[in-house]
Image (cartoon, rainbow, N blue to C red; front, side, top):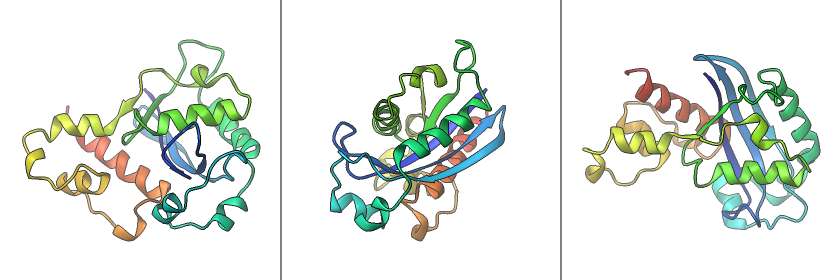
Length: 189
């Protein structure tokens, strides 16, 4: 199985209005990490930047506006993807895997491709993504009522995974927690 584990940090909650400022993750093939990435990216110039979102990501407006332009990061991303799958082969794609990605990150990533005038998003990735939060919901259904919330850090701790509070909301750290949760839940089967 080819997997694209990813997490994004954004300038707000609305993919049609806000933009990405960090994109991190790894490509894993049959359980082996083949490549990792941690891209800082200047959001789309038309994107709204919300101060509250920047506080969550512990970044400033000046920092994110100084990051490399979207087109540069898009080129790096697609160059990396092309090493691991053939976008012209309908049977060779990657699964998008993230934490709460089905209702958040996937839409932002798809919008990123569109904003870079790239209509090949569906050529790189299967349309059926894997949301680790959904997997955890099933695995922890008998404990859910005792948990204070279902955030990434809470689920990780419930599964016995150590969490460094100071690193949360950095996409590179969050995706590592997501991978650990995913493998904790799926490697048992």
